[in-house]
Amino acid sequence: MKLSYIIPTYNLPPEDIRRCLTSLTEQGLCREAYEVVVVDDESDVSPEPIVREFEQTMNVRFMRQPHARQGAARNLGIRQATGDYIRFVDADDYLPPHTAAPLLDVMDKNALDILIFGFREEAPNASRKGRRSSPTRANGERIFPSGKAYMEGHTVFGSPCTLCFRRTLLEPPPLWFAENTFIEDEEFVTRLVWRSGSLAVTPAVGYIYVQRPDSTVHRPSKEHTDELFRARFDALDGIISLAQSEPQPHKGLDRKICFFSLDILRHALRQGDWRQHYHDCCSALCCRRLFPLPPARYGWKYTVFRRLSVSRYGRCLLHVLETHGFQS
Image (cartoon, rainbow, N blue to C red; front, side, top):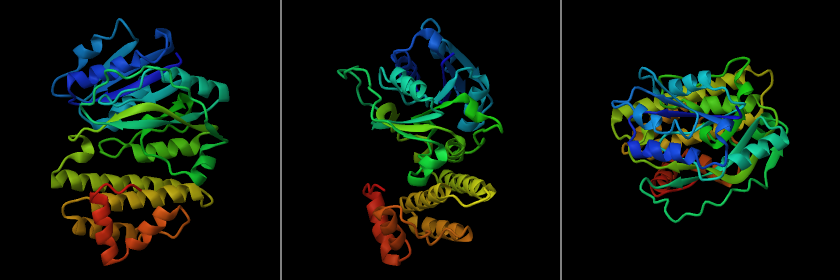
């Protein structure tokens, strides 16, 4: 089996799951080349009947677990996967047509451990009608001898959905997602890239993120927001632990820690009660010796944010920029 798709799902509309699974049948792969493992995190209404609709067109397995959030669902999918390569797809997202086969060709041709590809964001009700289904050409890739070499000059994006990787990277020692948390992917992806051999980046778009207003990170309650911030700091501590376990400091891990700290501050600036959230996050980062943000040459945007973040007027300006779509 060449490729395993792992799809966690929880309380999603049937049409979203169908769109996701349908997109996997449009990838230019023969049925024998891939498998699909769908793991339901104890949805109120089981999506199993929807998944069963695809049994005639793909090798698909359905599993249901007691509610333990997305990390546990992904881990169960990993245990069931048999492919040489693994890709994660969230059930409310989908893949552009005819993209998987060219990406796999790049991995095979260059004997890669990881291929990182581009993505596109899309509104929830965007129509797919009229879009061309021309094959994606995964050319222009940039190859690095290792994940560590890549991390020296690039910040690891904390989503597992924009990369394809060899299943053998997951052990030894075993690598798992954090469970019972909302931020399960930042530490996992960082550790995955850190342990990889040959890695490449391609501009080819291989994933579509559907921006749902009711997704995990967009729920408005104070309790949920507080839990998200706790989860972010737990993930940050996991990455700090990885850095501390290394015999020598590595600027790739330092870079990830700095940018993740910055990202936490950006999330604080977007809250309704942003001043209190920002103060709390600054205090928590200060305890970790990460505030003020460490001085480093990560580009002008990092430098500007770092300087503004320490003054009263600078914080107010950053809040305005964040709430009006400032991009880091």
